[in-house]
Image (cartoon, rainbow, N blue to C red):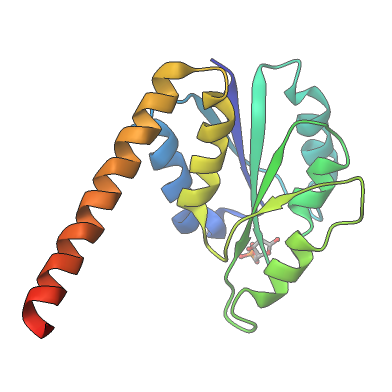
Length: 163
Ligand code: RP5
């Protein structure tokens, strides 16, 4: 199975990023986790992206806050799919990172999830791998069915109380 690269701009992003790592682990998807900054360690970030395909990665998750250029900087160096997580910071609540991550120029895509949307970032990568992996696809279906059962139960409780 291809690996997922999980890159964050700072170890201060770890509380958010850990949720992506845990989700990948739940599905048995191998990943590598690194702190590479688009601004503070640009050479290491570029080097990782340039060699990622040859090193067995299938997609890369990039989490960064503030002037969040990490996802775009990695996208500039690889044609592997990049999933960007805009990380919330205290002054602008993550809207700064959301705009920095999502507003990519044409020809240079970054699939951007919600602010702090680490679980969805992991699930999106798992869905990419599941295109050619029926076991993973079945596990995704199972999780969807569980989610649906939960909402149906909640609906039943609300309907019984109010209707
Ligand atoms: C970004 O700046 C990082 O991704 C982090 O979210 C933010 C703040 O970094 P630290 O100052 O906490 O290292 O590059």
